[in-house]
Length: 409
Ligand SMILES: *[C@@H]1O[C@H](CO)[C@@H](O)[C@H](O)[C@H]1NC(C)=O
Image (cartoon, rainbow, N blue to C red; front, side, top):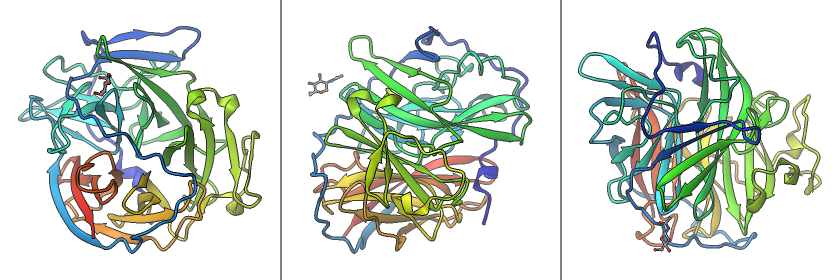
């Protein structure tokens, strides 16, 4: 098995980082661990009201035969004067916009490295041209001193001496819209003590609030670590809202080598209140308020357990399949989009690892970070019939994300 994490490391050097940007307002208060606001580029991509499925549905069209695949190429902001390279990430709707997060993001002019951030945020320009983005934080029209999209806490902020010391917050799934102008995203929090040595502290929940009057997006972290490595990283593998309840899925990376997925749920109105979370045991089919503290593998409690390890993916309800779908990559670095489906958010999920798209490899080797974006192509029939896919592609010296359109038969 290939160690995917090793390929995500950035191998450039810079001596210092500037955080100043005229659009950014930072604040810390005792209530929040970290907060930042910045202006969103004003490209509107409203989605039609999401179908509100029943908790239990009756799947159809489940042979998942593919009618067509169209590779669309590199995702890029055509107005950014720097060439931007980045990986990972996911998208969601908020305030009639589509925001995209990415992980390590690097900017170059013709010859030289100019800017870097451990994550970045962009806005979709149009659903018709899914590769065209408008960079909100890695925006070199404004400043080469990029800041990350996600704010650092006071513990993290001083630990910045790239590349030997840094924190990196990364995500490999979609964010989750919880109301018209609010969404959340979960990032794994990694601490580097040298260029190649880092460890994970768990994940951190970022709440996003969009203010339509000011066009400002505020990102808030209530605590440095939301789900530490002593439990599962709920929300970091996938998430979905069904009837006002958020289901947040996390991998058992420690004891199952990414084969087991555990799930927590919380009403969307209380998503940042950890005392309202319930945790599922698939064996007893009961939800309990006691957060698991695993010291061994608990396969029977997992909502999904597969022969193949999971890496990245996204979950959503597909009208076309009348089913809950998980579109994902395995950890076997086989550069392949696969699909599982279920009649409810707690399964039973299929584990036949059905292949829907094998991606052409770049000169740098395998692709990773595959995620599906169901808010695109809403006019191509029932939702879920056509999907935007995105993944991280390894070029000869850089990684970047590419998009593809998949249509089911
Ligand atoms: C989004 O669009 C809807 C429908 O046009 C509108 O009612 C709402 O005010 C819009 N919200 C924002 C934040 O622009």
